[in-house]
Length: 190
Ligand SMILES: [Zn+2]
Image 1 (cartoon, rainbow, N blue to C red):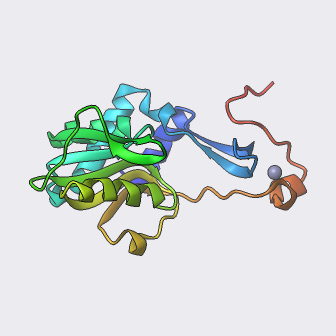
Image 2 (image 1 turned 90 degrees about the vertical axis):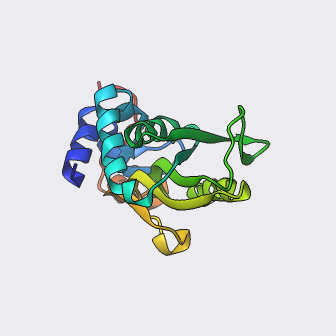
């Protein structure tokens, strides 16, 4: 599955919109990305899971670890395609931890899977969860890489698509300057 095929699935399911958007942060962008919208369709989730599995099989993971909530669905699909366990870490009092009886130990080779990697901050945090259990992290993977710095991850990283999603303060927004009307994603165009 090449970059164009992945973006087609996102566009088809409304998971990638192009225009002029006011994001929940208050910043403006010419793109809006919501991968939950593509992953709601089982055939798309399955296809993306298989595509990431094909790119990461050589890392020989024995378990997939994802950060909740965004990483859970794609982590499950990648685990299924690889035939390995899929577990997730979630926040408790601000820190990412394993709960629900999920365990990792020194016998595990961990692949960290997320839907979207932005700065790589949550990826590093998820890697630290696995390493604290004594597990070996063999790599990281995401459907979309929004511009992380692979050098800072210090691990092999695979993404199906590299896509910039610029954001601007309203007063510095070139789309506002051009007079393009701004919309809130998810609201229906009238
Ligand atoms: Zn704007």
